[in-house]
Length: 187
Image (cartoon, rainbow, N blue to C red):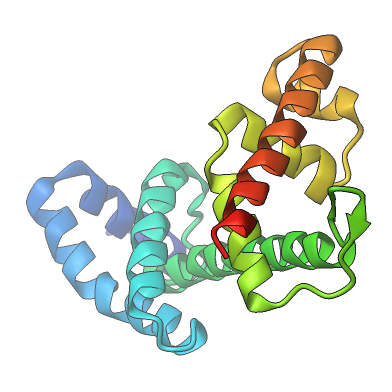
């Protein structure tokens, strides 16, 4: 009788769990609380975030099951995936904060007058004006104005020609000014 190494046992465990519904349910029920607790403790106690990232972790684990080599327990492997999902989340938050900061620092020029300081009310009106635009116009403003990408790069990301993107950017800026002006007129 051959002796199985811990690597073979770990790989076999995961393979069995993914091959059979009952085995998967057992593995999932055993693994879920530990992965969820890991994410809750590192996500600031944000329940929605922990739930979302736990779901993403298990989906990624199933998609990447061929990468599991058994050098660790499957739960340790899952927590490694969860760590990457959490890092992705924090990077996205950082990008959003940088965009918001750029929006504030750029001191958006409206009606020929520069705003030097944006308060909460101004930021809310800017966000509302941006949300009022069609998705393609929002996208081009985000890419060119907030992310500071060249129009050619924004065009590539959007799958449009440069001239179509320049036209879209012109319409987006005009639409933003009108929407923001309407917000200010309500005061």
